[in-house]
Image (cartoon, rainbow, N blue to C red):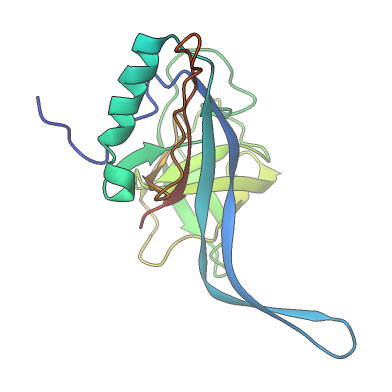
Length: 198
């Protein structure tokens, strides 16, 4: 069966996202008085570092093949922080509802989400808008929250919002894959870096 992209590479990944942060696309210049002026050159993108546990030779080869399917960054996958699969206040495995974007404030960073009955969002939670725009809650609780990055252009009220297995489309940073094995045992781990691909 052919692989379809973006591929859910992390569905059974035997490891962790050791980093999952925003890559700020900014220009900086220092003034004579010591102040640094920062100018945005575009909205920030998500970047990640993934590291597996030590694996036996057969499992290591399986993951080498999985990473080969990403063609060194040419193909995309569904990237997400593996530490934040559900809202902090809603652990467990029960199904959580999807919501919708009720309102976007003029600053494009404050939003109101409807339809998330029984869910209280808090700083650190992740929300996915339109099944591809990933945002982290930085302030507020409940339905009215502030997020980063700012809401992308073209997103309007009524867009779907999910809070479980939130993701964005990512591509592997070319040359960042490491899959070395120990010469004595054949055991090894894989690691790679990724960046959001819009």
